[in-house]
Image (spheres, rainbow, N blue to C red):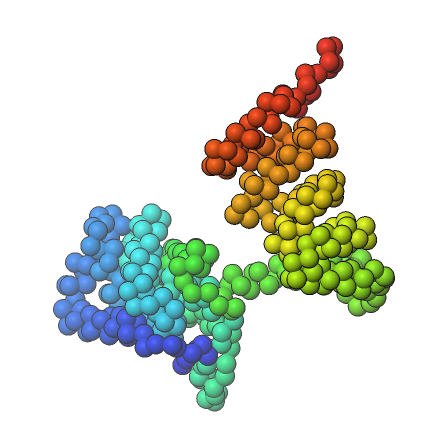
Length: 389
């Protein structure tokens, strides 16, 4: 004989509701033992089911082995589920599990049903989802008495087997019939498993690394890793990192950038602009800090270095797209393209983008007049094939 004592999963709070359910079941069993007619009025009759009986049948028990087994397993498994769900959530879950078990029994069976087995099966299903790798301490009574720890799944299987065997033996000795609600057990377990998995997936219950979804996730990771190994991936093969040759101009770039910053701090903007040209000749992707880049671009414009100035403005727009006065930079770039570089398509684009944000009437008039001066894009030559998308 196996008698469960406790689970190895620690409790974070006192499971008041579970203790209250055990007490209510025991008290009601005492009442129905003294007044058996109460039991007859509140069992669940599949032929004439009443709504209240879906709740009342859960607190009625046939005999001492029936209530003893149920309360023992409710104590072992219910405390931890109560702890994970909280008191109000656990009470609702427990009663709903009993109702679902009763509905399953009504659909498939004809005999009256009573007992907390369906609700406890729902609790056990939840326990399997929340704490699938926990162990239970048991006392075993064979030829000698001992204590051992076994995986909870084995005790859960033993719960259904032992309870069914005990009840079958009792009923066989009394009237020779099997009166065990197998469908209610299956329905309750299904309810507990499915509802608890949904609540974990929807983050309605706190997750941890040992719940069934976390274990499934890690199993899937291991499966993917094994598939890679089967396809030829060698996890122990050493691949030396590729050596990247250092840029021989890196030190020179750092020196020029530092020199530009120092010249701008001394207000020597013309000399800083000349150094910027040297920097672009070494690496055309180099961009200065926001204000330095803008000051150098404006100076290059003033000095007549139009291609370099346009490139400096383009780099500024690309790297500082959230600049608060970006429309003014676009206006300057559009003027460069339209008046000095002959890039009219690029000029039209910059003027149109600038007009979307310009508020100064003089600046808006300047952009509009430039657009009128360069005119619309040229029409395609006659007979050319249309563009298809």
